[in-house]
Length: 162
Image (cartoon, rainbow, N blue to C red; front, top):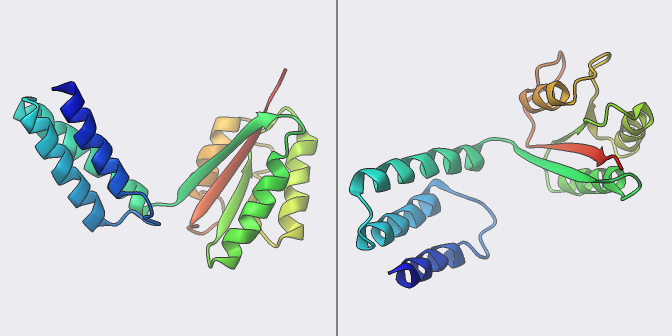
C-alpha cells in the first residue's frame, strides 16, 4: 500500500518538473491526483479533504505572493555577493527584488549589502535603528516602511556565527 501511494505521489511531483511557475490549473491537477492517491490508500475522506484544502491554500499563496529567498551561511561564504548577482539577474528578467539584511550583529554586513544594492541599482530594506532580525525580515516581507512597494522577491541574508 505504501509503495503504491509513494509511487503515485512521486508521479505527481514528476509532473511539476520543467514547470517554471505554479498556476492555479497545475495546482488543481496535482491536488486531484493526490486526493485520488490518498483515497485509494484508504485514508479517511475528511482527513484527505482537510489535507488537500490546506495544501491548496499554501500553494495558492506561493503562486501569487512575493517569493522569499533566504541566503544563510558562514561569514565570508558569499551571501551578499550572491544576493546582489541574483537581484541583478531578476531585475533583467523584469522582476523587482528587495534585499533585506538580518545580520544585525555585524553592522558592516548591513552596510555591505547597501553598497552592493546601490551598485546593482537594487532596493535594500534597511530600517534605521531596528536591531531585531525577525522584525527586519517581517517588515521587509510586508513592505511596511514608507516608500516600499509590493515587490516580486525579497532576499534575506544572514551569517551563522561560529
